[in-house]
Amino acid sequence: MTASPSFLGLPNRQIDGSMPRAVIFGAGHGSTYPDKDSGGYALAAGAIRGASQSEAPLVEHWDFDLGGPLFDGKPISCVDAGDVSTAMHDNAGNRERIEAKTREILALSAVPVLLGGDCSVTIPFLTGFADRGPIWVLQIDAHIDWRDELQGERFGYSSPMRRASEMPHVAGMVQVGLRSVGSARLTEIEDARRYGSCFVTAREIHAQGIGAALRHVPEGAQVVVTLDCDSIDPSIMPGVAARTPGGLTYTEIIDLIAGLGRRARFAGFDLVEFYPPTDIDGLSAITAARILTNVIGTVVRQS
Image 1 (cartoon, rainbow, N blue to C red):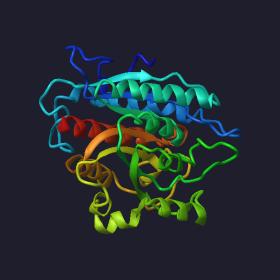
Image 2: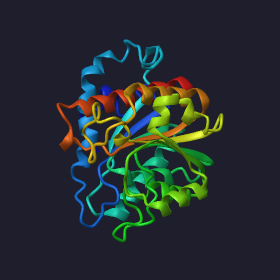
Image 3: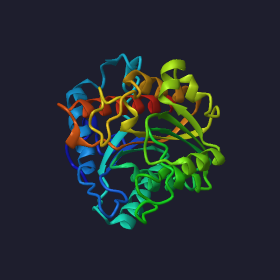
Image 4: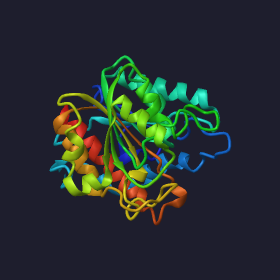
C-alpha cells in the first residue's frame, strides 16, 4: 500500500472514527495484452497524488470550482487507502484484487474512487458493484471500448464497455466525448447501439452543452463514472497514449460532474488512461488532480 504522499494530504483512515464518504485507491495494472507493457500507466496514481500536494494546505480554502471549501465546511470525509498490489500480466490476480477492494469500500457505504491504470481496471471495478445494482455507467471517453476480445484477451483496455453490457447489475450506459477513430469497427458500433448505449460525441457537447449527455441519465439513478483521460483535449491532457484534437475542456468535464451530482447519485468513479511518460511539464497530472478534487467535492455535497 502507498504510504506517502496521499492525495491532497488526506488521511488513510477517518480520524474521528466515522465512516468515510469516499475512499481513493490506486491500481497500476489491470489486464495487459500479451505484447504490451503497462508500466507507464502504473505511474499515474503517484503522479496525480504528487500534483495534488500544492493544494494540500488549501483544502479548507474557498474553491471556486465547487462554490465553497472542498468539504463544504464539514470535517474531512475522504481517505486515501493507497494502492492495490498489482503486477503486469497477472491479469486474473489483478482483477480479483481490484474487485475485492471495490467491494470492501462499498461495504463501508463509501464511494470508491479508483486511480488507474489503463481502461482494463474499469472491468473489475464495475464487477465490484454486482451486489449494489442497478447502476448506470457514464463513460467519458474518446472511444466506445466495445471490442469482444483483442489478441485473445477479453478483459483488456478495448473491452470494458462490452464487458459492462454483460453485467446484470448494469442497467444502461451513456458514452460521452466520442470523437475521431479508434479500435471500434462497424460491428462494435452496431452491437453497442443494439444494447441501447447512448452515444454523445464531443462535438455535441461543444455545441449543446452538458445537457446533451445528462438527459440520457435517469433522474435519481446510481451512476458509476469512468473517465478516460483521452476524452479530454490534449492541450490540457497531453499525457495519453493517443492524442486526438477536439476533446472535452476542463470546464465541460467539471460541469458534467457537477450536473450529474445534481441529477443522480455518484456510486463510484474511476480515472484511467493517464500515461505520465507522455505528459508535458506535469500538466496532465495537475488537470487530473483538479478533476478528482471536483469529484470528491461533488460526492461530499450529496451526503
